Length: 386
Image 1 (tube, rainbow, N blue to C red):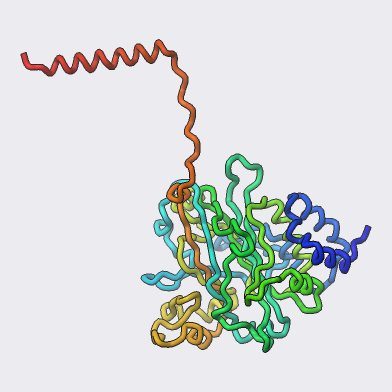
Image 2 (cartoon, one colour; image 1 turned 60 degrees about the horizontal axis):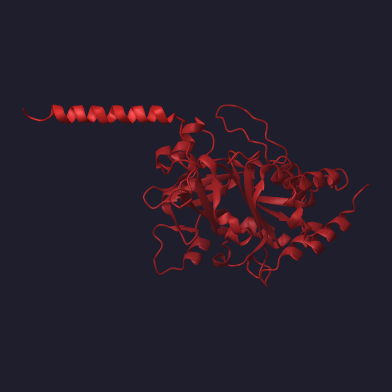
């Protein structure tokens, strides 16, 4: 039976079903399959193709040509840069693995969005469409505790214009993902390995999904929490992403990224035995779309990150950080994030249970003990002077 777009979206908005779709992992995938052929807007956008292939791994090997997954916008692919007060701004792939923490086993990662800055051209798009959606996904790179499927965390927020129809001031564009998913403050990565994706898109006001987002938002902040899924299966996240893409097909991407390998410890990177992926030590990150990376290159050694924004190194301490960031060159779009990485052992997490001791017979133990005593006595008597 064909599903009515209007009926489906109205029910989602009225019952909050969108937030409950993942209670049963198969529900999202089944719903996506059911509406895949009935909700179509040819030529309306590439979001359905992108989110439908969200888990597809892009090719990173140098010197090899790979066909990009469906829905890929090459100009909006996200590049990660790390900021360090000593080493400045540099691309994450320039971080030596020895700079990662030398934690054994599993780690807990948390993150916050320090700020969002849009270029003049991207601000004009935002003012035309009057909303944007920020989505952060972190997936475990391997299963834990014998589970059948690795776990994933997802947080999404909406950005709406101020009363003048403009992008809100920079100081109001921070976001803590834990406000949409209480457990996203502590993301457990078994073995220190995971996959990270950050996306910003804008749905067209003519889209019915724009109304759904407005209905779901009940926060007056500039970056309003919308949805959060803590500790769901990767399979469920893939199903939801496909559904989400169908609903929000009429989208324009500002930042686009599929989950890419991220290594939080030296051990994780060493075991991977590959150059693919990003090293993820704790600290400040700047995310820049591919189309703006060439503009940023001449300024890499001239910028620093303060309060979630890039400002010139020679900026006066008396200047407002946000005014300096707004006026700073180059005029590019970027997102800043702060990551923390902690060993679960140092956080008080109980270590894995020890292996059971080998079973030995009581006579064997007694004999062994007797031998030890005899040896000890012999040695002791041998050390006495005559």
